[in-house]
Image (cartoon, rainbow, N blue to C red; front, side, top):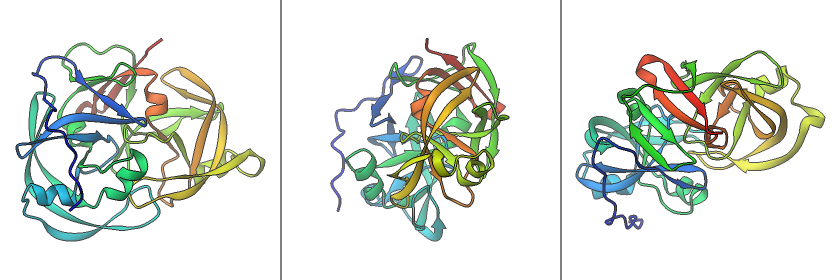
Length: 274
């Protein structure tokens, strides 16, 4: 069995205030209790379903069944199994979830240098209004009055999107992805439409999440505009996936805002930190 993370010292803070948001290699981790077991979860707003590592699921003695194809942002298809009625406590609240079961060893070791127990997906965002301050290292269930620019939340193949614009082109839907710590992604079809080809490609780098690493072309966006704020000379990777969204915006950009999410109300507020 893979070594389980030594997290016995973790404690969930009391409800009603900001709680710790730990940032590791631009990935966001929050304390959780899963069926009575304390651990950490990588917070991934673009994950349609919460995922548990297969060894952690065995450690919890979960009843696991099913066998379906699963696709992440990596190179290969995976096989997922499932467990029902999994109790998850975090941020002062609790949920009972159907979760996917996958081997998270490869993606954990590659992205954060250690195994992962859990990817906590949009289940939490759909259930709870959240206030997230990545640079400040806090997160909380939030029922106050949001501040910042209000953006509508749409959807692309089950993932939440917000409007953003590249280099003066019209706004497109960008996946709002707290699980993306690797930088902005541009879908290959959209890249071709706006001329991010040929001489605009400055190199190739390895990237990708679940499913393993893949090589991607790298471009530098002259500008990226989100919630009225423009970012200059933004490195971005071209996502070659056939179903890729036009844009995917992760923590490299989102960390410049204090974020209030209300997925149930199909909206998000972004307040520039500066």
